[in-house]
View 1: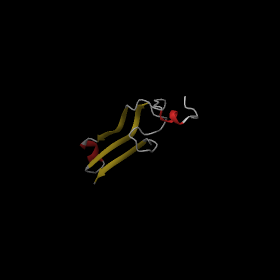
View 2: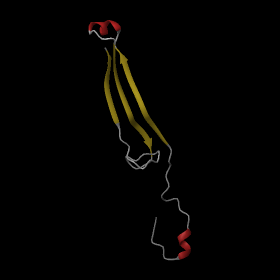
View 3: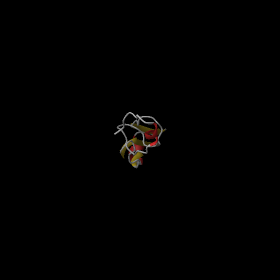
Length: 89
């Protein structure tokens, strides 16, 4: 364990106490979308309609402290969910 050094020659001792496995697996970005059929779109009197969902940083497997980014950006990982509808008139 780390300790207060009392002798100068001990200051250069090599230790792996603070090292950990830096491997990680991340689901970075996934997007689901559905385009409405033309029969439904024509009833609504529009040209095209699409519903979509986008998920970012949904899941990560790593040995890092909780919430830290294994890509080394120094920021906490923020998960985001975006829902939307795209309509063409």
